[in-house]
Length: 146
Image (cartoon, rainbow, N blue to C red; front, side, top):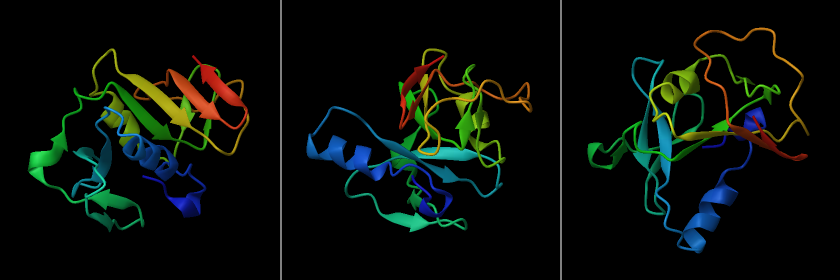
């Protein structure tokens, strides 16, 4: 879900198009857990009630019946501030997405969304062993595959 004040991509454009075209896609959105460091994902439909979390990010109500396990997604869209040519990314430093992506299926595709840069930077200097690289990134300059 986009955090507009951080200049994240407006994923509502993607979400609404999927709903409008009735595409056979199950959408899920993250909910930051009470521990403050982990995410769970819940199904997102046009009827899902959303509540702003402590950072102002809209989250679906945490209904256990609609939880989407990390092993389910075929693809994950990941907001970011920058990425490099190896698919490493910089977010907001919480490690939320790296922890979640590490739990996903090995064949799941991780796609970054970046509206600030036209292309990846050559290399990021502060890559950690726990960082999970992207498979691709969508930017105003095109699609970058890693």
